[in-house]
Amino acid sequence: MMSRASVRIGVALALTVLFLLSTAPIRAGTSGPLAVIVSNEADARSAEALSQFLSGRGAEVVVVSASELDQVEDRATAIFVLGGPEAYEGVGEISSRILTDLESDLLVNRPGYFNFFIRNVDGRHYVVLAGHTRVETYQAVMLFEQGGYQDWLLYPSRISEVSPFGYKTAEVASREFRWTYAGQEFSMGLTVPKDLYLYYVSSEHQIPYEDWAVLASDPLSRPYIRSLLNKLLSMARSQGYDEIQTLEFLASFVQHIPYNLEKDVIMASGEYPRFPIETLMDYGGDCEDHAILLATLYMEMGYDVVLIIVWGKPGFPIGHMGVAVALEEGKGLRWDVNGTTYYYIDATQPGLLLGEPLLPEYLDYEHPIFLFPKLESIPMPVLVRNRVGVIWQSSSRVATVVVTVANFGQDWANLTITAGVPIMGGRYLNSTTLEVNVPPSRVAVVTLTFQGPPRSAVKLEVRMGDKLVDQIGSLPIVGELP
Image (cartoon, rainbow, N blue to C red):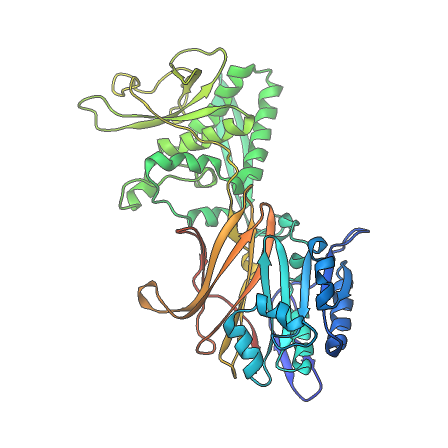
């Protein structure tokens, strides 16, 4: 936790920043990230201070003029521009391309105003540190150095170190499992970050059944699914199980998770499809929850699987979901789909083996619906909650929202980020919106600036297309300026 810091610059102005973040530097290797500082001669003092700060965090620092930027821009991890839209020697032209109209107006027309402004353009960070005069630009550098998020500007690929779930230190949730297979009893434990479980609980669950396959291909939980799978496979190998026995052994593990409809009853729609981590930590679920979990384990093993939906025969109004796995040789109930043979295995009823259907006298296995889950290259943006907050500047009635978002997926996350003072009806009294493209397995830091009543509650929303992917209802105030 960073202590309260006061910085006195020139006159008796005290700047207090309350970011509750660690500022211990990340130690880079022998070849650190390239940080480029764009400065004119008037801001040489600010450039020297910023250069020393970035060097201390392991960066290779180069100070260039505006005309020299194009020679190093493509190699830079982060670019720092000292000065606002009216800065001399071409610096202002660069700043103007980065800043919003409001930010430019504040720097030009608001005496005493200073701030830092962060953008992420195609994976590269651009930071403008500027004030109304060169004195305030130096103050902006001092403010920036107190933030605690600078390392993620320089090391955006170190996504595991900025996990929103604090893999090594967060409070954890644990669960013990017991099951039997082939007359033998087994047990094991599983631990996951509690925040990871809560993330899934708070995620959208109003998902039509034809889209349930996406729940089995979520990348954020894969490290924990892999850990679970490795334990199960180690047990299977120690017993000398063959391929089919191993598949049945994993199915038995899932089948012995109790069947319940508790969350489905709570949902007005009657269905609450769980993510695999939810099923494990809840230690319960209905047929689709079991099937999604088992399909996830099989996919992690490299199998081609389908989720099978079967409806009840006439007079039996209840449907069921199971799993089918592609095998060269199997046994029992199977389907040929596009030249591939899939063998059924039930994920719900303990004791059922490969090819043995549940309630065949009541369920219509001749007319199934096939859902094809895949570990696809999809984006997975998540707000890094201990790297998000708002700085209020009372005299200017300006909020600066610092946002850190991590893309845990395998494809670019094209995001629209909105921050503002919320009012009734899902609307905003004051707000601003920024588009950000985050590369796969990378972290992006951006700031959003808007004017509003000081110390008002600020809401943050992250959307991908029309889909709301993450949000924080009320941001913590992490800094206050006069």
